[in-house]
Amino acid sequence: MSKEDKPTFEIKAWHAVATWEYDIDVSTCAICQHSCMEPCIECQGKAGSASRCPLAWGECGHAFHFHCIDQWVKSKPKCPLCMQQWKMKDKE
Amino acid sequence: MSLAAVRVQTELRRIARRPDENIIIKTSSGDLKCFKAWIKGAKDTVYEGGQWELEILVPSDYPHVALKVKFLTKIFHPNINYKTGEICLDILKEKDAWTPAWGIASVCRAILLLLDHPDATSPLNCDAGNMVRAGDIRAYRTMASMYVKKHALKGPFK
Image (tube, rainbow over all chains, first blue to last red; front, side):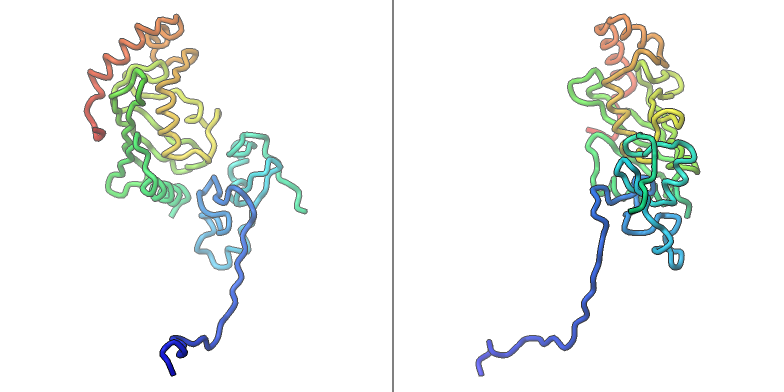
């Protein structure tokens, strides 16, 4: 048997892993500067935080962590990125 | 760690990765609440050749409240107080245009832009403001470049 016929390694098992991400232009939360795919700074490191740190979408089309934008609109009800009046987009 | 501290760290990492040739941020011994920054006057402006040191203070509620920035190096500009270094810029005021989308690097860039775009309607330096308002640009340029030569030629930029 020639050398080329011999496999150099052999796959014994494989596990499929799927990932997903939001289809948005701005993938970083402008308030905490962390990725929108991850929990906000306040929630980082807390157990089970990923499921309890949702995103909030404005009618202007910008997205932030809900916790981040919720705190900001208390001081000024405007989108941090475009300064339009902040209005949460209704969930589809 | 607080939101302010974590966000500042994130910003500093980003600045280190993509430095701006006209801005140098200096962190002193890991203090995340107080920085010194240096900015360099843009080419073909009256402030060309100048370099100024800024003090940047990070409030504990940052980024929900604005960074506090002032000039440590003296500068002759309508919107900057010659004695105290106080800066009149809308994005540095919560009531005005500050939003958490601004950060250390973008505020420094905004200050650099302010140098070449003075607003004579809200002067902190009345002499400079009056010159610009009266249209005496030659006098303003002469004064500004004189103060560049007097105070702002030394610094980390070559």
